[in-house]
Image (tube, rainbow, N blue to C red; front, side, top):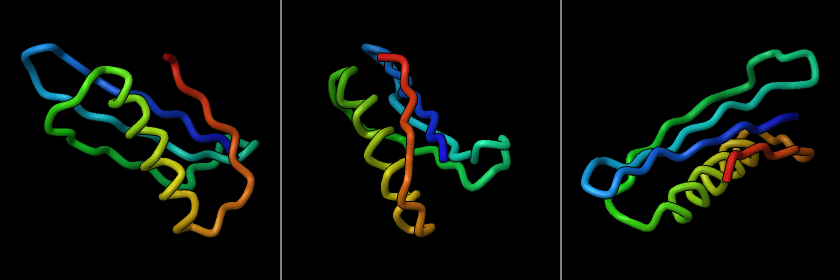
Length: 70
């Protein structure tokens, strides 16, 4: 399973993160988006990974390859 995540951060604007889980055939297995109140840019990326792992765990997915851009 592949988890692709990303965080969006602006110094004076909203912060958010999101992600998608797909299998090796690119079949969709779930997605999420999450609004974040305030935190440093690195934390936004880490929240994306955190929420992605939790989503995978809730779906009973035990093998996960995580992709992110930071």
